[in-house]
Image (cartoon, rainbow, N blue to C red; front, side):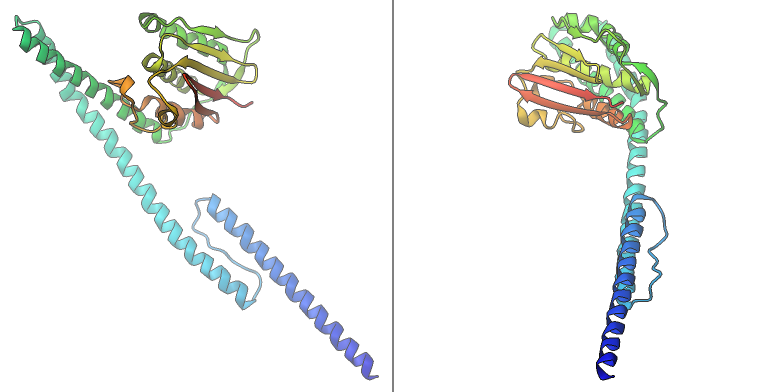
Length: 293
């Protein structure tokens, strides 16, 4: 009789342990799933458990405390980021009026009969005023883009978009002695993108080629939606190329640049669900856009 009692007791202990383990597994699954949901979604709800196990509930309590701190930090960051974007937008907008007036007065002065030395200084001032105007315009556009306004995607032929962008800057390219070599597939390459955003991306990348190209530009679009821009860029190196998409980054070869063109291109590209990268194989710079199906 005694052995059967021992076996029954052991069996009871095994069953109790198995139930305990299953409850803990369920609690950990609830914690894992709940934590993933709350990190992905902007919600104020906290973790809750169905088990009464004190250790699991203590773990959930600690995670809830960390979630509260994370949410507070996220709120401060979002609030500060929003205020910063609004200030940048306001400042760049407020700069337009005085800069327009300054450029107008400078234009009037340039029509006067001035000594050569005075005219040289006037040209220097005009160049700096023009650079400030470009910077304020790019700041305004960048702050608007960063405000995460929804895009309006529609089916667009990438071939036609490339042809239109090149045609729009063809005179500027020819003025720099650049004759683009364009390779496009015979059939349309359609993607769902925002046409205005795509036009800005292509324009900014072509503008980058105007700054850095040594007189060449090859544009290749594949049927898979990969669009590359390649040119000789003697003023660059691997370190500079790695920073091309950074805000306000410029190199000596691109004087007068605001350093926002490619940053805007990357932001818009990512908002459309595409990717943009830059690579350098001396002396060739390649900017590659990938538009997934």
